Image (cartoon, rainbow, N blue to C red):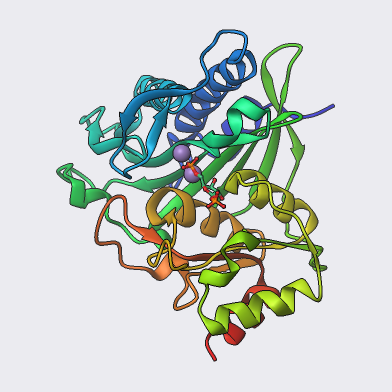
Amino acid sequence: MFQTLSEYSASSWKGSNEYDGLEAVVAGIADGAQLIQAKVRAAVLAQAVGTTGEINVQGEVVQILDTFSSDTLVRTLSESGRVAAVSSEEIEETVVVGDSPAHQYLVQMDPLDGSSNIDVAISVGSILGIWKRQADEMITDSTLLKKGTEQVAAVYTVYGSCTMMVVATRENVQGFTLDPTDGIFRLTNPDIRIPEKNSCYSTNEGNFKGLDLGTQKAVEELRSTYSLRYVGSLVADFHRNLLKGGIFLYPSTKKSPEGKLRLMYEANPLAFIAEQAGGAASSGKERILDIEPKKLHQRCALIIGNKDVVERTVSVMDR
Ligand code: AHG
Ligand code: MN
Ligand code: MN
């Protein structure tokens, strides 16, 4: 009935010039996602919700599952044998995991997105951007400061009513669903394109007062045109908008003048996926994928979804 992830990746990436080895990296992400989704679903019973008491490099309280997810994906990516380095929202510096010529990929990740929603049983997920390492490129923090346009692939998983993994390359966007009966990801959403018709807008309306005038105008226009859907987990809001049409915006606010979301492992991977599916992603000032990164954990504003609605929203913001 449905092609499996390993059948799809063996026929599409293995041995190809541009994507050779990507099948092992995506298999590593799939293995990690399986372990994370099982942990998330059992967390309350295992009393594994709540915080570790530490504060991460973002200045945010670290959830137990943030650390578990980060450690799990670093391990499964390292075991893929094709990843040279990983950066994570939960780890200040870059983690070098392999330095042979076979280790060609660089992965930047938000290992658990929406973590404040875990203890209330709301969807969370993982977001990963995948870049290529130049031949014998030394790995330092600046190695990972590559523009979003240089990604070769991007992946997110969403642990919701089902567990899905969406994988974009420069060719297409493929959606896989985890079969709970055998733990295999199956290609249930081939060649995803964002629907022409935009159905909703997603933003934290509680920030309205802290928005600049142009952005308030843009939100008012969206408010008068679309229904509001806001989960509070970027990956869940993005996934719904990708499949049903929609626009998500987390603009600069008084509280987060740079924006709240992180460029390298939230905005860049989702912008890559959105554009590959026919959508668009902007900071309000420039195309997300064109932003020249300066710091590993830098933040940016994010307006992402249906191309025409993103363009309209950015033009109203700009007035
Ligand atoms: P994370 O859990 O990785 O820190 O990300 C949380 C983000 C994102 O998932 C979501 O869109 C946003 O925080 C929600 O922020 P507000 O609660 O300020 O709306
Ligand atoms: Mn996040
Ligand atoms: Mn996170």
